[in-house]
Length: 82
Image 1 (cartoon, helix red, strand yellow):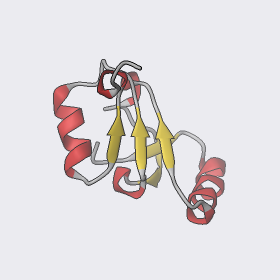
Image 2 (image 1 turned 60 degrees about the vertical axis):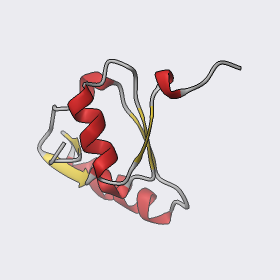
Image 3 (image 1 turned 30 degrees about the vertical axis):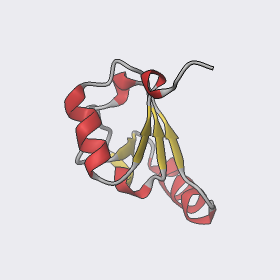
């Protein structure tokens, strides 16, 4: 979590950072399997996202860590039935 969003490609870093800077809202969609993994190049800290969408397999520690950063975290279990 401390490393934020990373990528193995140096070429993608600037493109993704510029896209984030020009967006009115920045949303990260990532499966729980991505949390705790990292690559060589850092794109952004998780606190730079307005919303993070993930699945219910995200650990309670990860959920707490994300929410403590003030980021809205949306999980399938959070939604109420229609």
